[in-house]
Image 1: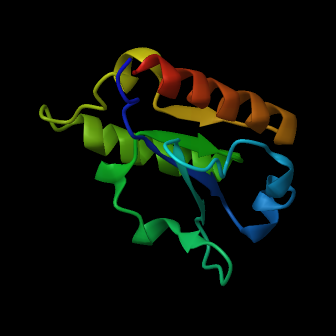
Image 2: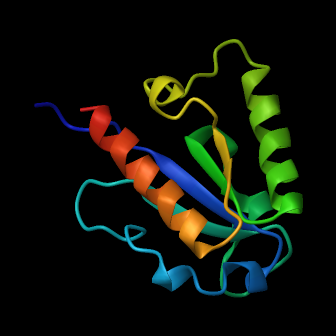
Length: 123
């Protein structure tokens, strides 16, 4: 068995309030080789990364927690996909839609579990 392919995942909310309760989601901080999650906000935040500081080319999957975040993620992915050289590798197959929307923390947990399954499938 080979090593799974690395993946960086952004969980994006419009503001800090949108990330409230995020610690209840399991799988965001697994030790060793695992997907790496970056919590970010569209608005300026003292606690979380700002969307504008993220290098989108290094992100393999986007999780939006509200409609403005979803639009931001979709715009970013559309810009990336306009480059014919852009690819997410095997994640284009295992996570075909690069943007997912979570309506609540249970939904987010399901998506994080899906990312884990895709991560394991790349090995």
